[in-house]
Image (cartoon, rainbow, N blue to C red; front, top):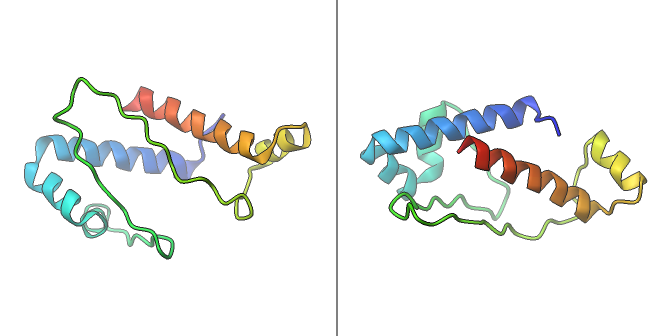
Length: 115
């Protein structure tokens, strides 16, 4: 599955933020304490979280022998927007949930490779 330009840009920002955390303890602590303000300052872009959502940063760098698997919140399928490729999957008999998890699995796989 091909990543969009926004996804690629987001992954590049994540790689840059992680690298900065590894080399700058003060930056890492600021990111943990106030992730939105720190990321806005780092990227120069305003971050608009969805209403009622917050950004949480956890430092897992001291647990080098652990691999974390994040279980995200269940998606609201009524608000789910599918790409043309995902719509074709749904039309072919794949449920929206399966299409969502196909995208999620691709993201996890890419994350595992890049990080």
